[in-house]
Image 1 (tube, rainbow, N blue to C red):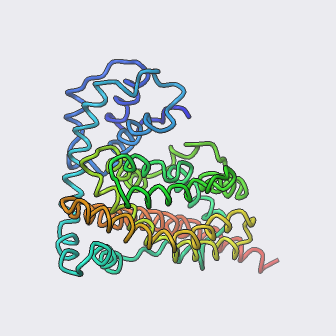
Image 2 (cartoon, helix red, strand yellow; image 1 turned 180 degrees about the horizontal axis):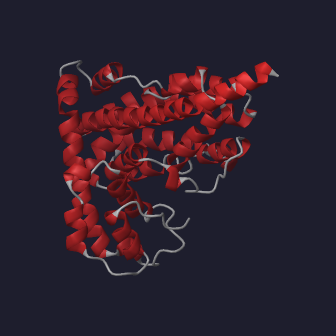
Image 3 (cartoon, rainbow, N blue to C red; image 1 turned 90 degrees about the vertical axis):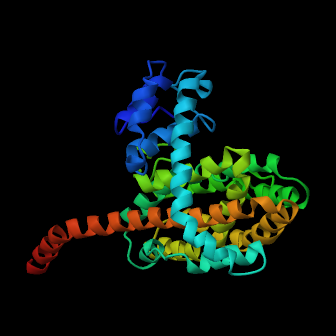
Length: 341
C-alpha cells in the first residue's frame, strides 16, 4: 500500500514526514484542534500513523514507525480523541452503571439503548448492486485486516479472560485454516462483487466517520491502560453483528451478487452469535472480576463502539441516499424515453 493522498495540512505534514521529509511539529500540533478532530484531515493523519503498526506503506521511510516527531504528534491527537470520546459517552456510561449487576448486563443495556442506523435495512431492501459495492469498499479498510486491532490486548489480560479471548481470536483467524480467515473471506467477497481487494485500495474514498470508527479500535488497542476499553469495544462490536449481517446477506442475495458476498455475512451471523456470549461473560466478565478497576473503561469502550459505528453507518446511508436523489431525475428521463418508445 502507498501512503494516502493528504486531505489537509495535518495529513499532509504526517505523510510528508513518513516519506522522510521535514516535519513542523509545532504547526502540525497547532492545526490538530478539538474543533477539527472529527474531520477527515486529522482522522486520516491518525489512521496513517496507526497503520505503520499494521501493514505499513511501501513508500514510507523504513524507520517511520519509530519517528519520534510523528509519535509525539500522535499522542496529542490521541489525548484529544480520548477526551472527546469520554465526554460524548459519559451519560450513556453513567446510565449503564445502574442498569444491572454484572458488566455483561450493563453492556447489554448499552446495546439495547443504542440509536439504530438505517444502513443495513437499506442494504437489505433497497440498495442497488452499485451501492453494495460502495458499502464493501467503505468497510474494506477494516475488514481486510479484521480483528488485528483487537490482538494486542491479549498480552494485557490473564487467566480465564485470556483463554477465552485467545479462543475467539483463533476463530476469527480461521480456526487453523487460512482460507477461513475472515479477512480472506472479505477479500473473496470484494473480488466476487467486482472490486479491487488490494489492502487499502479504497482508502482515498473513505470519509471521516469511517476513519474515526477504525481509529477508535487502534486507540484502545495501542495502550495497556485502555485495555478495558478495547475489551468493551469488542463486546459491543460482536453484540451488534448478527442481525445486521443477516440483513446485509439478504440484500446481497436480493440484488444477485455472487454467493461469496453473502457467504461472508452468513459466516458472521453464525460466528458472532456465539462470540457475543463469549465476549460478554467469558472475556469482559472474567476480566472485570479479576480487575474491577477496568469496568468503567469497559463501558467506555462499548459505548464508544456503539456511538462511532452508528455515526459511520448513518453517514454512509446518507451518502447513498443523496446519490440516489441526485441520479433520480436522469433515471426518470430514461424511464420516460423508454416508455415513449
